Length: 549
Image (cartoon, rainbow, N blue to C red; front, side):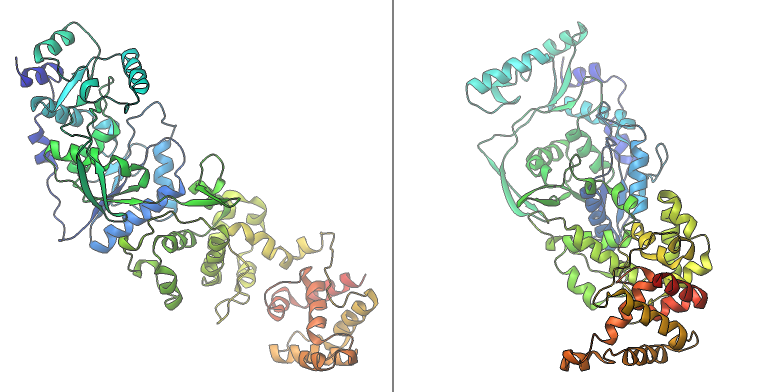
């Protein structure tokens, strides 16, 4: 009996690998085109670090005319969650990182290199495992869990590396006949890779982010096919990346230590290995200590958080590009109106150590992104978000024509308003513009420098009686406020007040603040002239009268 006989006994129905090599030919792409993938497990929400990897992979494939595909690695079926694939697909869709191939719903896919779900590729893995058995590069292992545990304890007491290798690989040297007999007797088994490696030898590897690294060779006889007939991650990813013709694997740097094993698997299978780029994790400052963003502790670890908060998609992508490439910030400053697609993303400019997550910076980018939008875009985005997450805001925005006037305030000029960083900010930032909300609130007026009730009432009454004219242009409107200030003994110019503060009670800016607070209940708002134009004369008068009570 020989290796081929043993392989036939274990996988009698497996096709020859030539069938798959022909079925999944080399891709017909331009020279230098990158084929990369996002390959998550459907075991819970997509982590922001996963989205970061997907964005980088998409950038690399788009700029080279390549292919970005979504493969779902679901061989660990015990950990799978319901509708896990849908969650992954929707997260990519939400952030406009759309795969060219791969899963498009829980069960549907597109592309010629599928199935793109590992659990549906069982026959493929078995064909390649059979090929490895025929070559004498894999073998059946009959060790029980108890035996493996006993071996581990012996290794620990002998203070040597744990694992299944060398003298500890008990089933490695079974003859073909012994193995066949055990199988025929119904003994349970798994398939292990027969590693040709030695730990005392080094391999040199060039990672596209980390640079040159060297490691001891892999000498572990890892499991490649489990007892349920499904492959382990290590084996499945090698077979899949070969057949899907992946040229660049972008993944988290926790996999860096697996490089020796993965390169060895590619070599022993006779495949050309892809290039690897290991991304450092996104870190968080936790009381002065750096740690990874945690699924358990940090709500911002889940990509669903950004959608629920209403942080604009472009802001999240822009922020991720900002931490990915140090050159991005200067590029954006020089090109404020260009599309993100025009940025020349470079893998070798990625940080070797993990970037610190900064929510303040992200929200600041959110403000800038929203400030560049038209009133129509702000309306559409906030209304869409409100339909899903905020009934009150949805109701407020039902009158689209009025909402567009509200969002149009201080928009489209050289210095647009930057009061909204995310769609969940919108309600607070516009509700005072609606009389039905404004007049139904118990108002607390946060007056500033001028806060004596009698002085405030004098300003408001005189403004209504003498100085308010809804038809004024902006200059005339402000000139009238200056006149009012002068009539009541306030400085008409701020510089006059600063030059001689004892001569005046306050200045025209303080008078404007009284009007602003009376009209809106806020000290910080967009342009007051535009606010008054939008709410109209009746509302202005009623609001000032209410504040005088």
